[in-house]
Image (cartoon, rainbow, N blue to C red; front, side, top):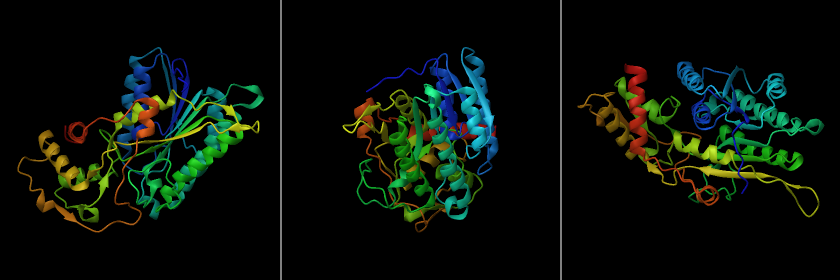
Length: 361
């Protein structure tokens, strides 16, 4: 496998104020020197913008500590083709990491328009810009890495989920857009020889995460003394993956663009790869919630005598949800010797500590 040095590269990260995007930018600035990072984010209010602003402040601080590197932030949408073309013309990125997307399964049922705009039109604009980066014999984008999702597996009965499985039965528009991203990237890799790697993320959590995720929403509700609903009567299993593990995986993948080669017909074999990044260890939702409340008490977010049983209710499954997510990560281990390793307790402890600092101090 090629190893590709990120040092001295210009890297475009879309969704840079997002949960995974901001953590990736922080790690790039911390671990690679010098590096030029351009971030774009539309800062939409799908969830509390102050968390996005907090993440950007963390990046500004990190950039200030690593003056050999350069951080540039652009506020705007990847669905704005003119803006994307301008960024590519001005900065000529060597690598593109597309993490901008409208997230959330349930929101896609009530607000489908934004998914089409960001996840399809936005991703198409990125692909087109990558394609045209080779115009007139230019070196062009050397690797496109993009976020897919475990939701593409839909209601597949076979677990753990493997990237070799057929994923033709999405159960939400969000999942359908993510599957479409993989198909579009494959076509562009084949037609224009653009090295691309898709990453199917499995339930990412951690400090300054997304408030629409269950662990964050549960915490808000418990703090307000409200009742939390545990879907599928607690029989949900999720492959929870701590954000630092996700970032480590993304960084490794960035350094390994799929090789360009021609087939017997003389045409490019698509330089295309796809990996799961998950914990390979699904946790029962009830156990997850139990550890969460213990860590919230430990951090002082909830009082020691909190009556947890009085604040939880087991309810039926939600439309668009799947009962289990479970990643087969053997390809990631085989190619990179990497496997996420943060335990649920350690990850939730870090989240609870951050939550207390952000909301209660």
